Length: 415
Image 1 (cartoon, helix red, strand yellow):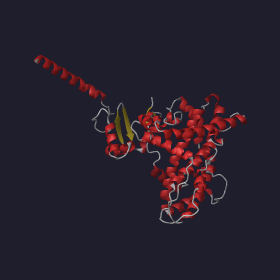
Image 2: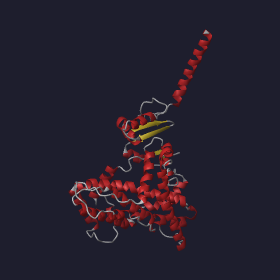
Image 3: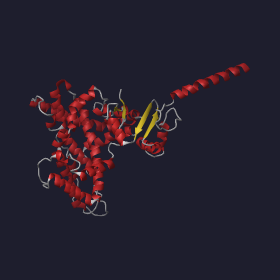
Image 4: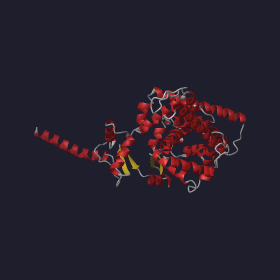
């Protein structure tokens, strides 16, 4: 009996001795000299992230901000089989991203955007397919093309001003919410630039204004307009991106919560059908015109025309309808929320300082002239020199600082 007990004790002791190195081997391994939380679990920081969210303190991105307050601007988050290095210093982050080809868009970020845009530049590594997308769709973000679209953007801005004037005439001195109307206006503009037509979101809001309004509070509570289906679709798909972005495991979150949602699929199909129909119409029109693809891409009437015409010009470089669809949807999502957020911050703070408003107005009149009704396109070369437009530079810089529309950029080491 003693022999059996001794044998058992030896087996247990040997198992413990062997288990200890195995346990240490599978623990998360931090990078040297970069601060991190104490390693107390095989799951690294996952239990701490879960507890942080359970306590109602915030989501994953808030947890990152919490760690920067503890460890400083450079730290690492430990996950099973993965480490995330956080660089909360804009200058250093810019140097890493722009100074060479050492990093690529992270797999995590590509997974998030692949939820609805699997064939877009946002979901692709920087390989030959990505470069082809970049060559064909890239001119849509060029300065020359955006300057050509300035008249459409100006028209959309004037529509928004017209809506606000109508609301002021209705509610008098009462305040009213403007954030939603920025989203409607930017959607109108982006669809106009992308497809060459407007969906009339601001006009719909104008038509929904009541004929009379009873002044009861300092903040006007007007009925909400019927939002265009495309606006609602954009909100639902964007919420899927947001949910995945705020999760430490975006792929699992997508499959558990997004792909199981009938509402998400309903609006995803609506959005893809809208852009797919536009692609079919454009291809049919271009085939009927029999163009040879000559001329500058930036002379195209809209982004979709530009891509299809560049396909003709490039020949074998054709993207295909699925790839064009995802690039158009990327354009749709990429500019809408960020633009609306920036403009909301501008309108939040600029009206408070009447002197800055006056200085900005005077500066623009000095540079462009005082003829507000002129239909001539603006010469944007006039504002290339920051010393010539210091007030504009300061207002834009402060607005972008407040908005923080690019607060998190995810990269991984390129191989």
